[in-house]
Image 1: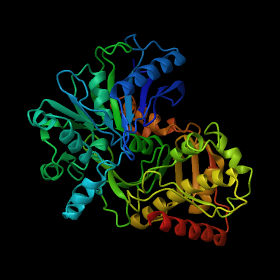
Image 2: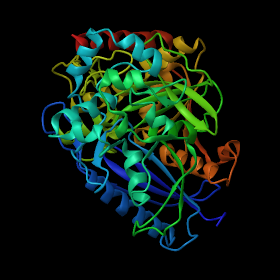
Image 3: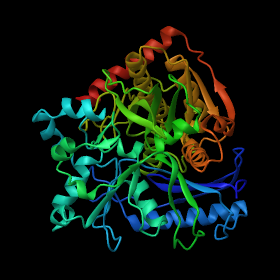
Image 4: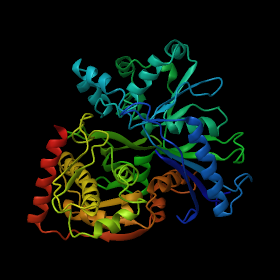
Length: 497
């Protein structure tokens, strides 16, 4: 039914959020279900596919109940949109659908040595030219090869077409379609190190470089089209079109209505991810960023520059779970506000290496400037400032690459609710920071793409679904700002060793 709401599934790193969204942008129901992460060795991160799927079922069921929508009734939902943690890699048996190994999460650093070897062999310039990416363990290509090399018989079976690879979007569509579809969308494909960015196609030369058999790859589809239909899911009626799909950061870019060249957003989640729309031509970064597909609507492709900080909200989680400084993540703002400044304490959140613009997997977290007078409040404030400093570095690189200033930054993600962090971000960057009423722009973006893909709205008609909450304006004097940035740079230099 055209006026029925849209179900958005936002499958993230630590949990799955389901949103039931009306076409005017109103959230009718919402639920989040967490699932475990596994750390079999230092620097390794895994998920169990079965636990991801269970979290999807529970989140969807709870969100539909909250919205008073019977998802098992035909016509109760007009479409489904999917957004997902991106580079996380899963391989499964095509016949049974059973994974052959745990999913290797985007944060996992197990293939860092492989990446170092590929760089030493001189592959990076060509890879960068074709993909817009750097060779890093962050991306999917080396994760696929690792699984094929470490699961007995997997590479031979993959060559025969018995094994399927997918990022989590692929896995969810496979499950939702009753095993009928093996696809990925253009944004997720652009994060694998295997897709030619200009052509939006798998590239044979890249497949050879990363030793990935073509037979394991899904078909690449657009971000707003009928991708599949539900079949035999159990908790949803058959025949609901999956009409929108994008990686989480691209979905957030769309969900913040960053439709024009120069529009920028930053998502503050487990990591921090800043993207700026660069239009219909991919520009290769000269300042440590990557170029990515923002979305593909029909034949039209839009590109973005992206900078990723691997640890943002995860630093707050570490203060909670690792150090016990706070009992819940929301407590950090009050604790940080209990002091007027960090008193010279600087926190570099390199708990999983440093991403853009440094790309150093061996960098490690650092807290400097501690004195006898340092309290947990100073460390809490330094942690929030560290997140803002990381994002400043990303925005600075973006402005240099795009050769134009970023005057306005749209923000989302859980940590964007933190007023202290948002004001410091505005002060550091000298930018206006705009926060929407609902900071779950990834799920909203998936709903907006599904509305377009199902033919319910034109792309430009989705903009009113985004509603502004608060604007933060820069208020810091230049001398103070420069002193903060100099302190940050000294700490980063130490973290890089």
